[in-house]
Image (spheres, rainbow, N blue to C red):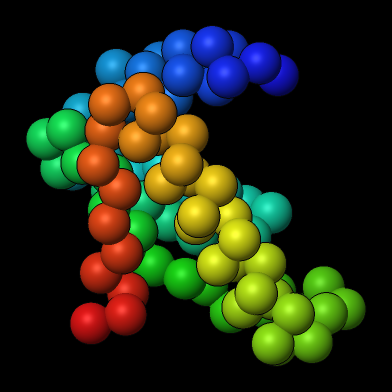
Length: 86
């Protein structure tokens, strides 16, 4: 996917979500909530019982996913924050 495609995809996601709407990334267990023009990481799920992965690998995967979301949505003009670390 080109960077232009990523930007448009992110804009589409944000336009489909209502304020306080929830968007999840199942492959990494992250849940985001739309708040105005900001996408807020509101939940990090633990390792699903049927997934054979170590906790620290899952945590690293979640962090990499969050950083990718932040990069792409940021390029589309949206702020991405993480309230799970508070």
